[in-house]
Every structure is written in structure tokens, then in C-alpha cells.
Length: 312
Image (tube, rainbow, N blue to C red):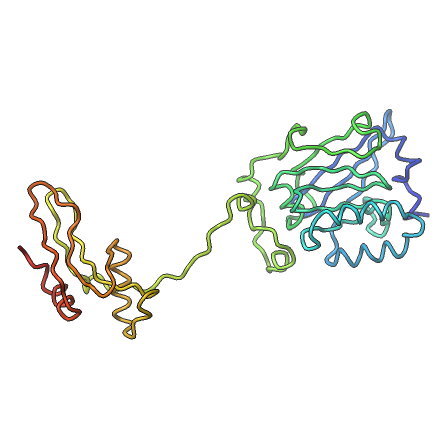
């Protein structure tokens, strides 16, 4: 009969293994494969995150906390290293039987430390992961069968002797197995936003370092036929008209149509002096006549826009 406390991952049983493979899949789960010398077959466990992972972990601790106090103490230590909303707890079960759950094996991921910590009994193995691998481990939703792992590394017993250890990305033969662009093409369209609502991870690994700027709705620009025509100098430069007021200083304009026109001038690189409308020209070029600054009232300004610039 299977025992969630005394099993193939107990300390007395682990010493017989020569190491283990840790794999990560784009289905959002990991696989632990214990390897043995000789002809003995490997022993496989899967690690998955329940929908309410912290509640599931609390139930396990209530069930086996008295028998495995050091294990749950180590898990709690790992969880305390990051903010609660940035950590996730994965439970282990025997391959082929999801009901055979191990209470002495857990995986904790953190997108604050960018690592997955495997806790075996009272031993902690920290695996630093590439952004993309960690991202898929948390939000992956690909099918659970028929796909190769995107991360697969072997931890020999000679590298850790079943003691605490940390593995860095530089230590791996392949931090990511495959091309990210090719892997992303296999991601099915999201059926809901549940995964994105449950976690605070960005939608792509690139945004860890370069978050996407927020899109600001743009104001409507007047139709092209209603815009003033500009005179072009022989060298291609354009005479610009200072024709808008700064709303941060003088307050919003009560006329929304006028504000849209003023916004258009702002976007064209037209600048102004508050309460003083003037016609300006960019730096005069040789052979191109300069325009003399002319103070204009608001009515004269719009008349100028309709009729063209005054010439000197």
C-alpha cells in the first residue's frame, strides 16, 4: 500500500538513487525521474500546481506535519523568501496514479527569485530557471501528452550528495530546449483569462526586463481637408504656426473642437507662448525669406489659418 510519508523518496530510499532528472513541460508541470545504477528502471513523479495551491499545501501539512516537521519547515522557509502572491506550491504524485501523493516532496516556484526549489524531505535543491521556462511552468496550458520537455537537466548524486545545493542557469547544458519562437507557435489560444488573473506574471518573458508601455488613447485628429496648408521652403523645411495653449496652465478649453485642433498643432511640433499667439518660422535658410513675428488675437489667428501666412 502506498504511504505518503514513507515511500521511494524517503531518505533511506533516496540514497540508492544515482541522481535525478528534472524536466519542465509547457503544460505547466514538472517531472522528477529518479535514476539508479544497473538495470533498475527509473522512478517517475509528476509535480503539478493545484488551483488553490496554498490551501492544498495546508491540508498536507495538517495531515503529515507531525511526522514530517523538518520537511514542512523547509518548505515554509522557501515560501518566506518571496511575497505570497509571487510563489506557487506544486505537489508530487506517482506517475500513473494521481491519488498517490507524496507529502515529503514539494516544488515551490517564485517569479521574484526566478527559481524553482525542489524540497525532498529536509533537503532543498534550488534550480534557477530561464524566464521562459519559469513562465511556462506557472502558466503553461499545452497538452499533457505528446510534447517534449523545454527543460531537462540531470543532477548527479556526486553534485549534491543529497545535501542543499543551488544550480545556476550557466550550469545547464541547455537552459531552454528549442527555439522560443517555435515553441510559442505550439501554445493554444487561451480559453479564458483565469491563469492571467491568478498570477502576476507578465504575458511574455521579454517583459520581465522591458515591460510594455501602457497604451494611451489618442484624441481625434481633425480631417485632413480641414487642416491649414503649410508653405514649404526650397530646402524642404516647413514654416510652423504657434497656435495652441497649454491646458495644464490655462485650464481645459470649453470648445472641444478647438481643443482637437490645438492638439493637432501640438503633435505637429508646434509650440506656443501662453496668452501670446505669434507666427514663427524655423531657423531661416539661405535664399528663403524670414517671417516676422506678428502678434495675433484669437480671431486673427484662425483667419490666418484659413487665408495663409502673412508675408513680409
